[in-house]
Amino acid sequence: MDRFRAYRLSVTGEEAGHIKRNSQLTVEVEPTQHMLRATIDWCGSNILYVDLSEGGELHVEVSNPHGPFKGQGVMRRAPGEYLQLRLLEGAFGLETP
Image (cartoon, rainbow, N blue to C red; front, side):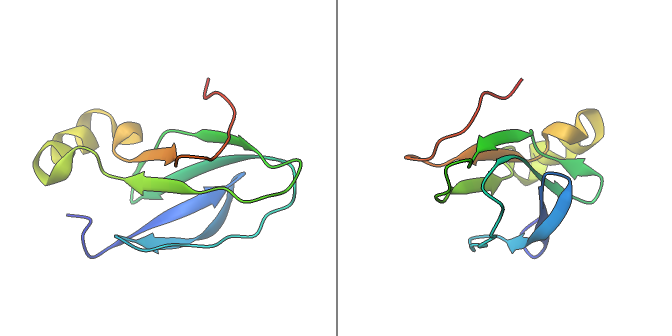
């Protein structure tokens, strides 16, 4: 279902860009704490809190962990859990409340 579409990435409430399947997006941000979230239509991901106060770079992955069939049910029952946003190995972040 998402194969040919792009996810929107928001950084601290501001849209930072779009990312398609199997692609990368580079976003420059101020060196401070940020809140990341990915969305597509009315569905979204968990919120990821990251601390870039000391600068550096961060690598995250956005995915639909449910697949095309289970994903349709999740879209209706729990649209905020349709996507998964996670830090990739070697990255640092803050605990998600």
